Length: 187
Image 1 (cartoon, rainbow, N blue to C red):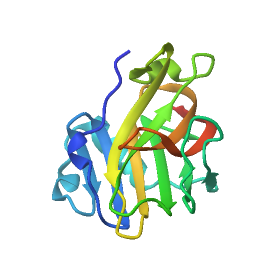
Image 2: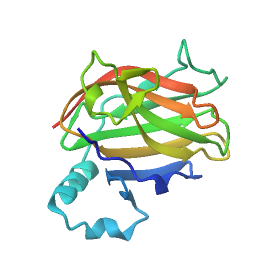
Image 3: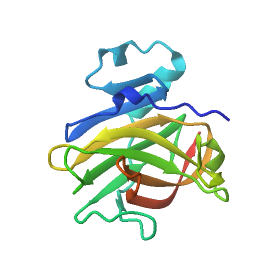
Image 4: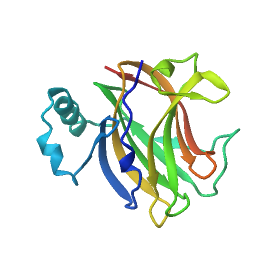
């Protein structure tokens, strides 16, 4: 199943709070509050997802930590994510990161497992483990203090998910921060 991908032109952001970003498909994203086109969304499915996103409320924050094996520890790096356990049309996730390298690029990833829900809805195969899949949904830049804060609405195929969240360094693709398997449902 082909998944809708995020627009790569939103890759760089130097503001502490990047804003609310709605990802409809590859090449079709909105940064709310900075894009007048948000008021002109004419497609009913997109308008419905956008309206639900704007009205959404989050569950409690969950901490991000260093990956015990296979990652790279950055002293002082930390953060948290909040997400909706169930959302129509996609995943809504807010992240707050700190203590990362200032003005540096990082990749945000959903990573599956072949034995867990949602793996087959992710787009790329993990090299050396073709059954495990992942989705690099955003590349962005931290601010001058090594922080980043944004809320994403990511259109995904319907179904249950049980995936990991990664913050990867673009220099060596090592995982700097992660949250172990978390469950949500795309209605």
